[in-house]
Image (cartoon, rainbow, N blue to C red; front, side):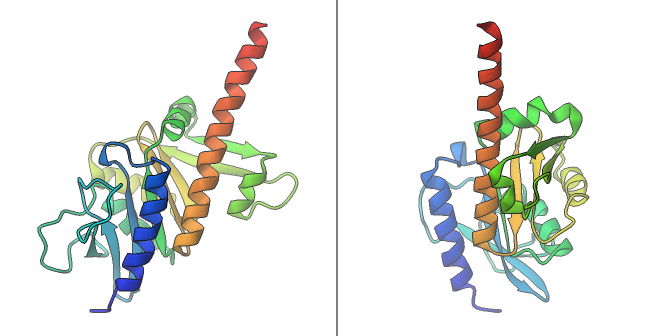
Length: 209
């Protein structure tokens, strides 16, 4: 099997950065990075671990179906099938899933629409939206408790090597061609969500004056 120490270190660094932002409340969230394309294999966070800590049991290597490739007592994160969908359907190199208050609130506010759209915001350029009238639309899918059903719905929105999907009242999953790009997209999304909530609050306050 291919040596994956470099991918491990890269994913560990991303995990540390996101932990420093306090984006792993209650052991929530999970991360994955591609190790091989033929056959597909990737490192994914182990379930139930405190992601604020760095240990030798933070990740395990799995195949394209999320099954462990090495003998281990660890269980892959619950949403591993989402990462599997990304790596099977695209050439993405890294996938990140976090639960934050802003992304949960936005997903609920716009959940009935099935999407949230941003326009005239500088950070949509992270998604290669460079033109004056470009818009960024992020799909919002139902939070199915049955993970295979969630994965099936999620996979319909994996159309490129980078993207983002909100799961209603659950969290966001982003993916990119490498770890740097995935983290950049996640940061951009979280900025946009916080901006939108701040704007709505300001508008409400102004209307009350």
